[in-house]
Image (cartoon, rainbow, N blue to C red):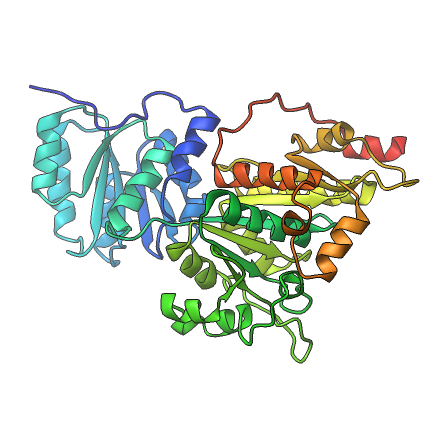
Length: 424
């Protein structure tokens, strides 16, 4: 009997390889998934997959017991969109148990079997009986999410663009300025389309920084999510260059802007469908929707100035995002407004050490250049193309878009944030 290997999960994936595989996968749509597991190892992988941001829309439940437990459960309950069944039986016993499940399983449900028998004949028989996929244990996280994505993502859908969010560790650190200049750099350096969305509806500055006053923008996109498609989104975009488009905030206080957790999800997904890079200027706030946006997007850049309050806030952000995004790379760190005369500062290495990060860029304080650019509605990259910050923005642009290989540098060991506070 010929044999083959149906899964490459038998070996351990290091963190970098796991993240690389997960980055290539599509988000899972709103589906229901139930798993019936016989071993703790497979159950742990499925539960971990349920906590991944790509599975955020899916509703996952993990039960103990294999195919027999599933047949008993569905005798009195409807079957979900996807049923995952683990079985340690050999081919004959496995097929016999599946026959009992066929009587209670809805025709529209997809079934994936996780087996322990490496047998190509069994695989062919299972697919002949309508099983969507047979994978061999042990199962890896990327195997499982990739399989679900393959079963439920439209095969002819356009590739998703990359979503990148910029957030300040504290108000006034220049996160919006960095975000806007990086968006301009991506559009200019790579001649690649960019959508910049200003999510600070009350106090956003993107319209001022780009000297634009569009009649519509991000507010119309959020409040009309039910009719948000590519055509509607195009009408809301303001052109800021050959490859850069802006979704401006209204920046008015004639109403309050309280949103549900998922309010910005349709907008981000719609922008990703037609644009390679979607940059989000996220306000310095912490509520349901900002937490949801930061949990779901592909890349996060934290902008901070080198003082103790920024360090504390950045530490809280990094720790929280590591919990919310356990299978993703940690956020990037950009130090801004460094070298202000007579202001005591925390050294860049000392600032980054408690965070376990290496600063992606350090941008020096230069009020004349940045102030002139802001007052004239231009980017620093336009008004002062030879300014040192332009190189920093280019480095950030290369890194967050994946245009160059990540530089491997040893991460600093973590030290106590409160120890640093005591010393200071």
